[in-house]
Structure formats: structure tokens, C-alpha cells
Length: 294
Length: 294
Image (cartoon, rainbow over all chains, first blue to last red; front, top):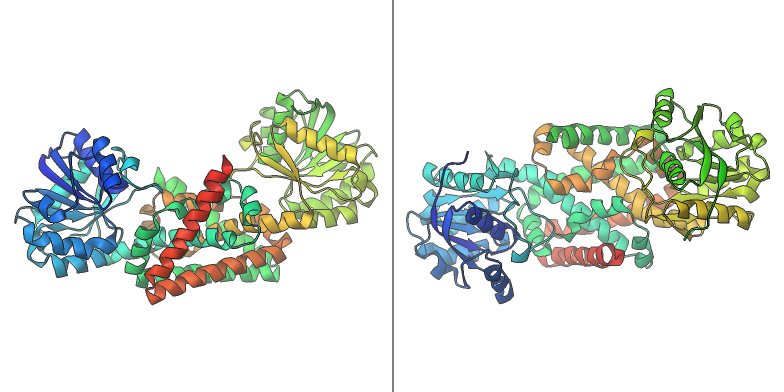
């Protein structure tokens, strides 16, 4: 059972699928009194208010964080430095700040630069969830149920701050784990950032053809599933790929090498070799993605 | 409404997901009296009999096709030449032979060589369906409902033979279309064969890592969907990739070029360029794979 928490004022900066679902889950658990949402577009904030995702809306993060006990940074990582700079002078010593960024080394570097006076209250985090949909209207309270949330606390992070963030995510139904920030970024370069690049590139290579319309009209479920994540937010995924580029480029190189080996076997007509490679892949998927999940 | 057909003796060579589901659909529609199944393994044939997918089983295709009015070749394409050679002397002039191969130029070349005396009764076909599961136990009668089946008839194919095959697939609930064999192979190299290679290569590039177990334990739905088709039959997909290698290598080269452009933008830190590429991909997916399906 998650420990009982009570947040008086939760500030969600970036009321999209991620931030909105976090607010809804805490509201459903009656773990929060007031949710203030900050967003860039009036339309999205209006939708968030109407849907009860947030109780108050503002476009000024500095004003919003006054008196907050919990601040979630849930906007694209590229906006972190500006937002951190803006809120830093307005944070009370006891305010806990956490984020939902998909990359952790860069968020930590931004915090060291712009939240230098508040590192004991800062808890870097990454909820492993999301769909290809975005915006407040896509938010739902069960998004995190059974999902993993990774914390990558700093040496300076106060244990009480980390414990509060852990409890909040557990209240959302998530399983909370800890990783070193670099290991986090290396793992997600491979299992998340690389697959997104693969999917975006696959769609583009087909869309570029003169007969694209006809091509896609003959596609079946295989292609649709393979490129589902090419529906993900271009802004968010650009930030992620640039922020984590050293480790993403490593993962991409491994993948391109593997693809080149398959291409060579196909070009040589080496059916035995190709079949072994396909069998390895099927075996690994079975072992780690099917059975490993139960 | 599909025209009412009545097949007295249907022979399914290769009683897997594809052949088994065809038999089940025709049985459910009461469009067939007797289904004889031919397979390589006793266990699979026993399962097919037990599940009512077939009424009789044999391991000798030559015997089975005697007196048949409809023969479906539903085994991996690599086995086509041997099976065609074996059945050719036993086909009656009125027996219609069709296949379910994912590539068409190679099947046609095999037919020209091994069914030379029976080309008027031969109707090359490709049902666009399947899941990552295989074997008779995976078969179900609704597999083809709403799906496309492509016919690529020869000049020699008798209109009556093509009409019977069309009606049989329509009876299964499918939409039947015609394409030139080379255009078929080019389209499916892009929308089907390439995505399989992409998925197999992605799994292998992750599975190769020393921390593979940990990596996969952090994967989420994005990776799982992207590599779902890496669960497909290695034997079948090896045959397909080798049979269609010229057109697959073209599609693979386009994809590798696209990937290289994304890699270059990531390496340069060119966020604007990367974002445009991601936006193109999201737009194309939306236009052709989401809206285009309704």
C-alpha cells in the first residue's frame, strides 16, 4: 500500500497527457486539495479546466508555484531551462520539485544550473508511460497503473523529497524504481528513443514514394503496429533525441550494423544465415517481451 | 453478396494459420463438403483434425489432389516447387489451384516451370492477413473478414478459375483486388517485407547487448508494438525475403538512407531539421494509416 499522502497545492507545468493524468490520479485518490495548471495554449488549459484535470489555470509559472508543496515539470524537456529559471526565485525551501522528462542527464544539468539553490528539493523522475496521443483531453487517471516510474535522485536530494515523490507515484498505481541517471539514459536510448527513430524513418521512407497513397492502402496490421509510435509528439521526441544524442547514436549504430548484416544475407541469398537471425529475434522477443512480462 | 459457391473437395496443402482459417471460413459458410489437409508434422495435422479445421489428413499431396475441385497451396513459398512437381501429374483439368504466398513473381515462375500443363487452372493469390501466431491451432474463421486478398492472374488463367477463387475469398469475408505481379511484389516489399526486417533487426540489436535482460525489463508498449511482427515465422519470412530480394533491397536502401539522414541531424544537433522529419512522419501516418483506413 502506498503511504497516505496529502498535497495541499499541486502545480503541474505542462498539462498534457503526462501531467494531466498525474493530476487526475491524485485527485481520484483524494491525495491533493488544489491543482494549478500552467500551459502554453489557452485552448488546452480551457479543456483541462472543463474536464476537471486542474482546478485553476494560469500562464505564469512564477505566480503559480508560490505556496505550492509539489511542482511537477511535465512540459517538453527543451523548455526546462526557461521554466526552471522562471520559478527558482519563487520556490519555498519546502517545495518539492520533480519532473517527467524522458531523459535524465540533461534535466539534471539544467537543475544544477537553474535550481542550484533548491537541489535538496529536486527529484528527477521518469514515468514510463504515455500513448501516441497528447494534450489534456487525452489524460486519464489510470495511465500509470502498473507502470514503472524511475527516480534518478541527486546526491543532494533530501530523502524526504524523494520519499514524497515516490509516494505520489505509488498513489497513481505505479511501481517506483531507482537508477543512476546515465544508466537510465542508456537503457532508454535503446528501448525507447531508438524505436521512435526507427518508426519515424520507416514511415518517411514509404511516404517519400510517388505511389505512397497506394502503398499505404495495402498495408496491414503489421505495418500499423510497427509505426504506431510515429504518431508521437515531434516536439517532445526531437528534444529527447537531441538531449540524449550520444547514447542514442550508439544504439543507432548497433541497429544499423544489424540491419547491414541482414541486408548482406539477403543480397547474398544466404537463407540459412537470414533464418538464424530471424530465429534469434523471435526467440529474444518471446523470452523478454512476452514471457518476461508475466 | 458473394456468389454462392459449393466446393466438393477442398485440399489445403499446409494447414497453418492461413490455410486453416480459409478452410474454417468456408466450412462455416457451408461452401465446402470435404476438406483434406496435408502437412509436414503429424502433431499439427492431428490438431487440425481435432479442431475440425480439416476432415481428413494425409502427408501425400499427390494422393490428396485426386478428384479435388479446389487446391490451396498454403505452405511456405520455399516448398512450392517440390509440391507443384508432386501434384502436377495428378491434377484433373477442371481442378482450380491457387496459393497464399506473400510473393507472387516467384510463385508464378515456379508454376510456369512445374504446372506448365495446368496454367489455365492456376490463380496466384495473396491474402493480406495473418498474425504473428502460426499453426493450425491459431486458425479461426474470421481471419479474413474485411481483409484484402490480391489476385495476380496469368494471361493463361481461365476467367472461370479466377472467378471461383474470387468467390471463395469473398465467402471468407474478404475484399478481392487484382494487381500485376511485379507491382504486388514492389508494394509488399515496402509495406510488409521491409517492416519485418526492421522489427527483427531492432530486437537483435537490443538482444545482443550484455544487459539485454535489464534493457527489455524497462521496455514499454512502444517497443512491444514496434517489434510485434518479429514474432512471425522465421521460415516463412526467410523465404519471402529471399524470393523478393531485388525489390526488398530497394526498399531497404531507401529506409537506410532515411535513417542516415535522421542520424546526421541528431549528430549535428539539428533540432529544426529533425523535428521537420518527425512531423512529416506523423503527418503521413495520420493521413494514410489512420484516416485512410476509415
